[in-house]
Amino acid sequence: MRRLRNVLLSILLVVALAAVAFLVWANIVMQGEREQALEVWNDPAVEISSDDTSITLTPTSGATGAGLVFIPGAKVDPWAYTYKLSGLVDDGLTVVITKPPLNLAFFDTHTLGDYTSRVSGVSDWYVGGHSLGGVRACMLADSPDVTGVILFGSYCANDLSESGLAVLSLAASNDGLSTPKKIADAAPLLPADTEFVEIDGANHASFGDYGRQSGDGTASVTTEAVRSRITAEVEAFLAAR
Image (cartoon, rainbow, N blue to C red; front, side, top):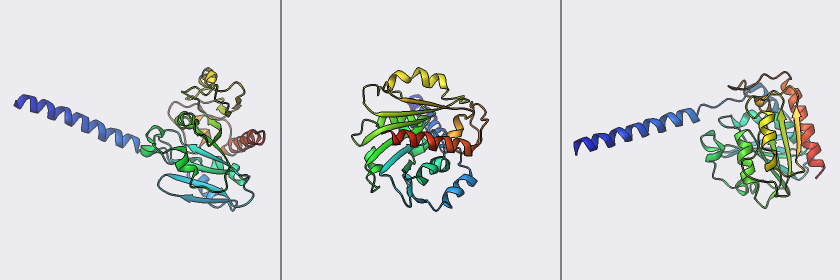
């Protein structure tokens, strides 16, 4: 009996240590770069609000009535995406950046409506995300509130090919993680009229501002250039709807 008890205690100890190790790992995030975040805070065209579940970037004037719920990549600080997305806000798009529990999108049990219901003045909602966040965005795309999907260095794991949704897929030529080939291989899961755009010189981390990422390629373009390209491509996509 004592031997069985010791075995059970050993198993519980291993499980507890594994849980602690996972929690420590999950909470070590790739931090957003301060300079880019401050630029957004100082932008008079952008109003920022934040709570425990999301960051909302609202245009101070000229709102278009369109909004994007954006899901961060795994273990990436949500604030790391504010600069790259702020160009869209400058031009009237409302952006909600989620804060997934444990910094992993798959642990977020909120529905899309939990985010969109907090924002007024938006009639057309898009859902998107970076890397793992894009995979999660595809899973939320069946919400009746969704007009389309925008993927940033990501691809779907579920089938949206017959969804009728408008989809924009942004890839980076130097992405060492969500490589252009992986994105192309997953293309059959998207509608036939999906728009595919490859940003020359960008890498996986170029879709945010959080420094280098293990396994990634090397970017050969500036963060400002990537921001401008993202803004132009997303705005053209939205204008065509």
